[in-house]
Length: 573
Image (cartoon, one colour):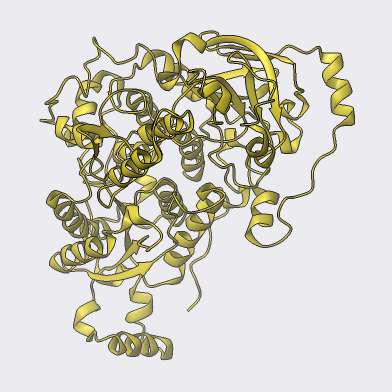
C-alpha cells in the first residue's frame, strides 16, 4: 500500500500555505496553544462527539473523547474535538428521525469546511449511528466509528430489567392495576443504571452492531458495555487507528460496498434487530450509491434464522451478549452466510477480523442448528393496504396473531388516539385492529415511534396484552407485539391507509407476507375521490424543509438532494 506524504494531507491547504490565509490559520492554532510542531506535517483528526446533558446515553463521551485524543497523539496525529448535534432518543420530540438528516448534513459540512484529514465519529443512541455514517460517507474522508456501548443491565427485585421492553410491560401492568404506583416508581429507578445506549436489542444496539458488521468500527467494539474499562481502551485504539487510515487513504467508499451491506442484512435478521434498521440501511446504502430496496431484505429473512436470544425477541441483555462473544462471536456462527472478503477499517477483511472468535454462552448466541427462531426476525408485507410495503417484527410478535382478521378501529392522528384509547365506551375488543394514521415521514413530520399503540385500558383489565396494530409510524426497537409499521405510501400523501374506515375488515397473514384491506376497489376509488391532502403540519424552518423533501420509508427517509450525484467541490480558501 502506498502511503501518503505530509504534503498530500488535506489540512496542508490550511496550515502549510505560504499565503495570508495560511498565516491566519497558523495564528489561530497558536491562539489555541499549539506551536507549529503540534500539527505541522501531521494528520488532523476530527473527533466528532455527540455528548450532551440531554443525551444520558452519551454521558461518558467527554472521557471517551480524551481517550481518543490520547490515541491520536500517540500515533502522531493532531486531534481536534468538534461537538456536533446530539440526538438523545428519550427526550427529542416528536422524533429523533426528524433530525437524522440534519446531523448527517452537519457531519458532512463540518468535515468539508474545516482542515480535517480523518474523523472519529462518536455515537450510539439510535439515530446518531446512521446519521454520522451517512455524513461521513457523503464527504468520504477516512472515518471510523466509536459506538457508545450499552448501559449496564437493569436489575429490579432480583430480576433483569431491559430498557424499553420490560419497562413497557411494567407500565401495562401498572395501567391494568396489577402494579402499585410505589412499585412502578421503584422500577423506574432500576432500569437505567449507567451511561450507554439501551441494553436490549433495540435500534441503538442493532445499528452499532451493524456498524461493526459493515466494517466501520474496530473488531469487537460494538458490544462493550459503556462503563467497562475495555471501552476506554477501544476508544484509545480507535484514535491510533484513524491516523494510519489517513496515511493509507482508507475511505468509507472502499469499505461500504455491496458485500458489506449484504452482510449487514444477514446479521440484522440473526440479531432479531430493530425494524428501524431497515430505514437506516436503505438510506446509508443509497448514500454509498448502492440501490438497496425492501426486496433485498425478503430473501435474507427467509434463509437467516434469529440466533441472538436478546430482548425483545428473547431473554437476555447486551451485557450477556458481550460476555457470550459479541458481534464477533455471532459472525463466527454465520460464516457460511457472509462474504468474509469484505474490508474493514482495521485493515483486515471481515473474515480475518473474526478469526479466533468464539461463543462462550450458546444460549445467548445460538448455533445455526438451534436458533431462537427458525426465520429472520423481520418480514416485509405487501397488499392493497401497503402497495410499497410495510414491516412486522415477527420475532417479537404474538405467534397466535400472525394470521388474523379483524375490524378496524381508526385513529386519525396521535392526539385522537390519546384522547380516546382509554374511553370505557370505546367500541373495541381483543380481535379489533387498531389503526393509526398521520404518523409517517411527512405526517407529523418525522415518523415518530408511535406504532406500538397502547392496549385500551378496559382490555388490559381483562388480561389482553397484545393486539394487531397498524400504522405508518415506526416503533422503538426495544418494543414488542403484533405491530405492523412503515405502511407505505403513508396516509399523509394519500396512501391506502388514509382510506380505512371504522369497521373495515383487515387481514394479516405473515407467512404469506400479505396485508389486505377487505374493501372493494370501487369503494376505495370513491373514498379516494373524496380525500383531501392535509396541509404541512409545520409551516416553517427545518420541519417544513423535512416535510417537503423527505422520501418515504421504503426509500430510507433521506433527502434526494443528498444522494450521490455530481461531486461536491472542496471549499475555496
